[in-house]
Image (cartoon, rainbow, N blue to C red; front, side):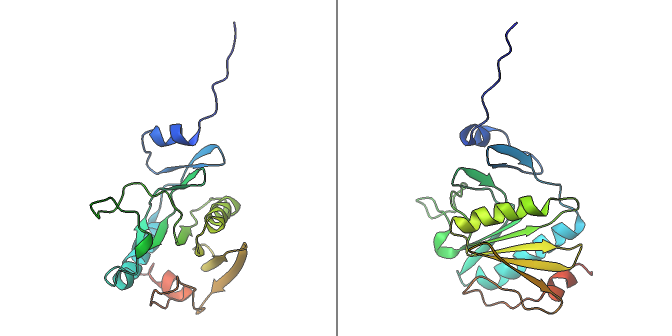
Length: 185
């Protein structure tokens, strides 16, 4: 009896697979399903999109997309929030937004889920920054802190009433306390 090993799944074959819930990502030749979002994660994600879109969408500056698949540089990621500058939003010839985003976001936000590996999440953020993303956030609700992630793999820790960095051109000021204040209904 001959045992044959199936070839590893490539990006194109991965993209042909049915979507999963929660979403799966293709990174460094491996498929990994994201954790199912829980209450804090969902509320921060939703409120963040509402705040950014409330300021930037109507002025055609940027749009915050929740759980948007971004495929670029041989990887396919689904950040918790992807913010795209208005001029970089992929569009069809009709002007409608494209279904496929094959570029990195301008601003990536990841919200750590319980038991999620911080290094793996940071690696994905660094991949985006290496490919043109301007700003990343890694939100850690367990420690009420947010890491600002910048090009060159530079990290800054923000806590308390620290003013958070935002994508240039978006007129919003947020502190760490405000972000975690969204969790108190």
